[in-house]
Image 1 (tube, rainbow, N blue to C red):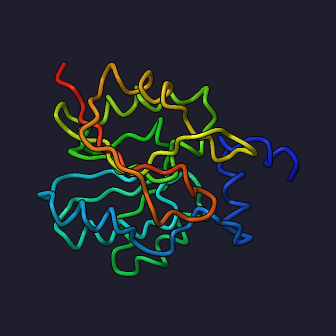
Image 2 (cartoon, rainbow, N blue to C red; image 1 turned 45 degrees about the vertical axis):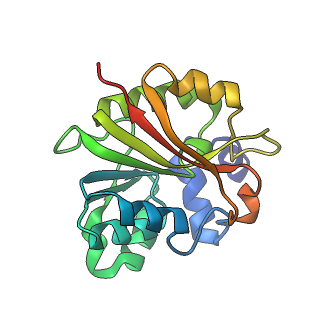
Image 3 (cartoon, rainbow, N blue to C red; image 1 turned 180 degrees about the vertical axis):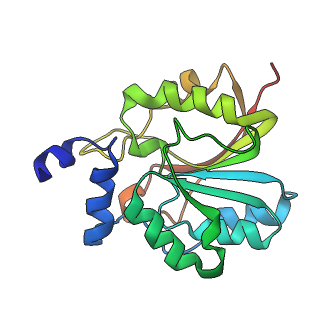
Amino acid sequence: MEQVMEQDATTPDFWDVRYDSGRMPWDNRGVPKNVKDYIARTPPGRILIPGCGSAYEAAAFHEAGWSVTALDFSSVAVERARLILGSFDHLVVLGDFFKHEFSEPLFDVVYERTFLCSMPQRLWPNYVARMCQLIRPGGNLVGFFLYGQAVEPPPYPMTELQGKMLFGRDFKCAEDEPISDSLPVFAGMERWQEWTRKSA
């Protein structure tokens, strides 16, 4: 059973095992500096955090006045996030990003952190299509995007060309900067990017 889960990062079981065992090299254990900077310079709105994991950032956005929905399809991750968030545990929802029905369809911002790179390349076009369904025209997809070559995925980083092909039609890159304080598993590959959804 473990061997099957090792090979399929698209299932909740794959991630449940890792959260249960504490194998979480992607877990930042706090709010990254780039997120704090973004919150400080951006008026609050409605934000989605898909694949939220421990959801440290959910509380930071909420405390700054944002309307936050943090989503994960791993029940173990959701339980962990709710424990971490305490009185803000209502911000975390158990659900599948690709299928979940949100009470309001459009978000001002979607925050990306270790979500896109958690899924194999074949799902990337589905990710972008879903983002177009969920982000209002003029809204933003912001966060940490992984660029490089996959060695033992996950994570699944993109190449420069793949990034442009994925996002170029529907989004325009407004910010792009390297990250100097990445976790070891992402070192040298992370970039903070802000992609604005083009008007239809």
